[in-house]
Length: 396
Image 1 (spheres, rainbow, N blue to C red):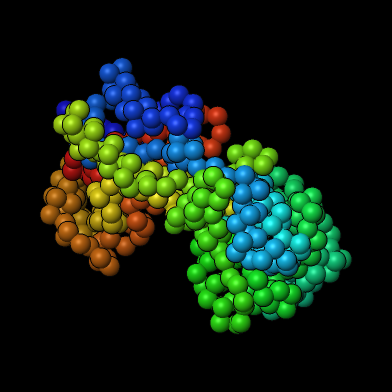
Image 2 (cartoon, one colour):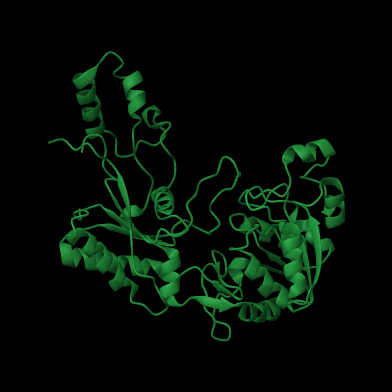
């Protein structure tokens, strides 16, 4: 009988993961237990995904604000430092800012506007137009900003992030000064020691600052790259991708994810005889149409994945074939023609007209986004996602 279901994404419930837990065993028990319970049958080319949060938790990859402060003092000198282009997030950046402030006497906080890097707005673009402000050239102090626009309120949470961040700095014993500018070089009018807190544009920002004469430039990916006083660390991403764990602690992005997923893949092959793909995922990469928030606050969607997830989809657009190549066909004849076309499609469609309109993104980014939406970020209790049929097409 012909299959009538294509891709299926299942969130799998798991125990609460603690530091030191054998995560590989837990994941295997969950997946194999679901198969034994009749939820699904493990097949070749299925995808098993585990959220980065539980990987990092099992690794015990945590750091306190005091440990972060020590690294900041060691690398930037402990006097006046600039912190530029942070995202507006109580979960993602607030504790990091506390640690940074604790390692300095003064913090000059420079925010991008009208929004941060991932789309959290502090002022509406139309209001800038009405006020005659050019965000590409104009620099605003906090007083100037509030005189023109009042207190900033986040679209969904209602938080005034400008004053919230200023307050955090002061609570940690540092003097705080806030400015708004989209030119990274602006900060050099205040200090030549800078932490650039942007995520996906960080390489360019560092280059611009160094070329403009900054004495010391560090990104969030350069902090806690090794253990400080027993802290967790991340050799590649530093504190990028970290989350609030407690009021004084952050959970860092996990280490050694590639080794972890390959070990899981090998173990499932050994037990079931099936070759599945395995990945660790964090934030998905998609934009909210109302809040304008681009979800991806992690440095990458997937910090570790098996080889079968390398590359991009190689798909044809069925509706293009139906409207063009086979416009004169109907019903079963049309279905047969399209199926035959798919079976014999080029192994690398590239910019072919028949592939236009398919999603030009990496497999890990697409599947990771699917996983993030499946597991959610709240109380679903499904940090493991099992996907079947993703690599199927109309002919399977």
